[in-house]
Length: 225
Image 1 (tube, rainbow, N blue to C red):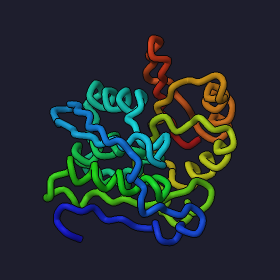
Image 2: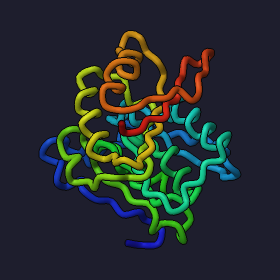
Image 3: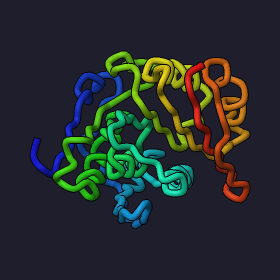
Image 4: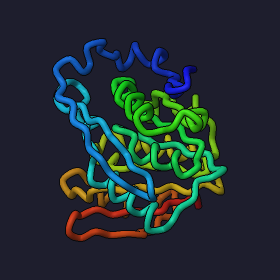
């Protein structure tokens, strides 16, 4: 692994299920957004258009979760962290800069954008603490260890068919000491409220820790029962 490249794993194993297009960004319109959280400046590439779809932009819930890290002065030093549906990677990248050993995950088509943003934002001396892997909920989650200290997800709850797969994945990745932070736009039409108020509490203890009424974004802290 070169000094400016994070470790990418697992993409080949899923190519047959979620093939990657070698021209993924060919018809995309790249944009760079700049943010500052916890004293760290972030330069985030977003490849709009192309084939990335919902993985391309920085969603408001991701920014809300980064702001929550800042407000709570969270310290990820010594923590094993995994982000689900990382998209641009902004949340997991910030967790890396705050000291975590972080695994950024998404479907294979999003890994190239993740790689770019890690290279833009993580200094060479911290590259050993960040890795990028393909993960499809409910399909290959058992290839990952259980008992992560922290599990992160921002705006990943919007497709009803994926909810059982996500729950299965969270159950596998978490352990008795795990803390899960989920930030989400509360879309009634997608059953997001039902996920947090009915489905998730069947398996986990859920606490609403931040609510933005104007943006309709909630952040939940979730732990195993």
